[in-house]
Length: 364
Image 1: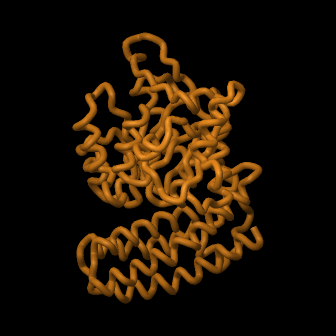
Image 2: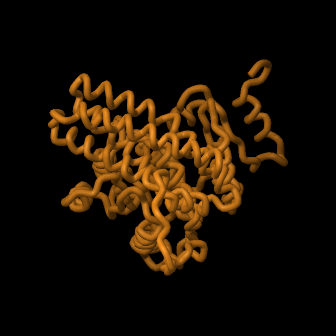
Image 3: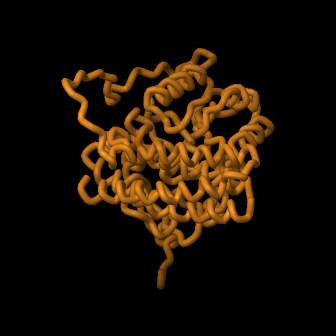
């Protein structure tokens, strides 16, 4: 900004006696890792966002900030103590104060995971790959990491091994593996690589709740009570089953309804924001998929189909996600003989998904 930049302004605000605890958000033109953020200024920002920002992204940031029960923690970021296993009481007995790091490169999955955590009374910081996980651990102590297995630059398994090498057992966070493909031996592979637990995507709220409860008990951070906000599963008998429409075949309405409910009074706005993010990113991933098929690049094909399938499942495009999975499995097996045909089918099915989601945004 002219005359005074954002960092200078933040430092001036912090110098005011009445504004030392005011939450500040820094907007940047480029992504900065936690290490780079610390190098910019000594001011502790509540969040760093990269321009251009979207309305729902800003909204989620506000929700996280205002969920803080102690405003001074935004500035001081006291490390979580883990001495409670010696018998001394822990300072962190409530769900909202357990410090969680979400490691997930897919923005759709990030938003859905944050909504699920919020519903359970938790909040989380977010990073996009294993290297950023290691940077974040240098900045703050985390009790638990929800670690996506498939991430660019450094995957979840490599990040976990690096954590085990660098930190002694008593200083390591509890690591829960999160993976979009559930194959025989996946759980064992994650546990053998040093992860403590395992859940699959799309994440189910009960499975997440159980994993977090297990973590708090193992870390000695108190026994979690079931969240009163999570509705109990109910079975409703219907006299007749209406026929499934074409739109319902393409998008499972119950998945979208669950996102609306998670968002509370702002549920429809949040859902529309997530859908718009998906509609912006899906064509780019489809383009990557077609290029990878042409170049016979199995690794890139695996990554792109994995990402597209994962976010599609989170928005109820189950059949489309299954088609992505078929192509992903071909890439994993490095058998691309049918990849071109499958890729063409993916493009055709996506057009149906796009129309259904656009209709959802229009009519809600």
